[in-house]
Image 1 (cartoon, each protein chain N blue to C red):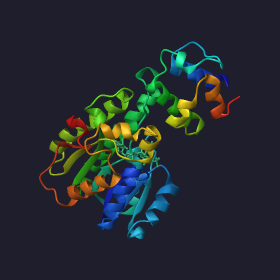
Image 2 (cartoon, chains in turn cyan, blue):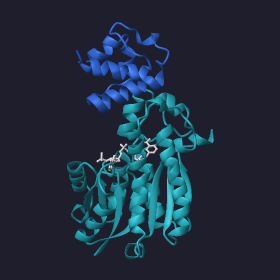
Image 3 (tube, rainbow over the protein chains, first blue to last red):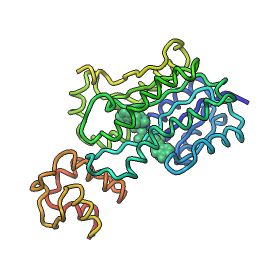
Image 4 (cartoon, rainbow over the protein chains, first blue to last red):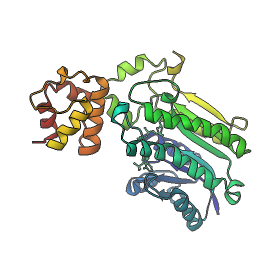
Length: 239
Length: 70
Ligand SMILES: NC(=O)c1ccc[n+]([C@@H]2O[C@H](COP(=O)([O-])OP(=O)(O)OC[C@H]3O[C@@H](n4cnc5c(N)ncnc54)[C@H](OP(=O)(O)O)[C@@H]3O)[C@@H](O)[C@H]2O)c1
């Protein structure tokens, strides 16, 4: 049995960047998302590709705990760190949200985080668990129109972080609060509005690589940070 | 077509829309509603629309033509 890092949302730009950095540093990874083919071909591009594993799970429709528990058993893996990059972002005015949209947003951003943490906090898994890292958004602390439901979901990760840091100690639990990062998704939303957004961020829009560096620091060098929201936003919220 | 027009009406918060209606004439037509239109066309029709495309749209018909709905 070997130690692994579970990374959800690995088919996203930020997920891929974090996975790439951690694979270069020699970690064994469990890459997760819904798109199996995408994850497979991505896995092959990584260092030590044969050691990485793929857990396919749709957080909207599947029983997450059951799926992960049987994966852990079949693959004989030990999960040392859980990094929850998977997320669902929907930008629209509040009046257009239907109940199912709201459920989906909370399911993918928050309930999945709770369910996976819940499974990993069972005695047989918890003794091996060292880190939990959640991915939140600057919209959870700075308002913008169109972001309300997503922001509400992301904001709950902050409460989860503080409380799990106490309940699960000595597991370190950290919530990364990200500002705008240049990803496929961001490109499609911003289109040609980069200049506008750059004006509002002292250090400009972020690159996914920034995040991988920081995650690597948290996993390998940091021993005394837990229960915190850490804002990584190029100074956007300082304004 | 009708379904598409209904979705546009919902975004613009009006009872119904006509092909000849000008987008600029709707009270609710602003940057957030245009992003909602982009998101709806992307998720329901799998077509990506850019902000630049949106700026070219003058009437409801322009939107339908872009999405190739007739
Ligand atoms: N980009 C930004 O500027 C920004 C800013 C602040 C915070 N964030 C947060 O950072 C994280 C990564 O952002 P990103 O922009 O790179 O992500 P993204 O492109 O929106 O990708 C989302 C990821 O979540 C997975 N996912 C979506 N729905 C899922 C479901 N139902 N079940 C399981 N997995 C699902 C997707 O995998 P599949 O498609 O394979 O299912 C994908 O890997 C997200 O949590 C996001 O909220 C991003």
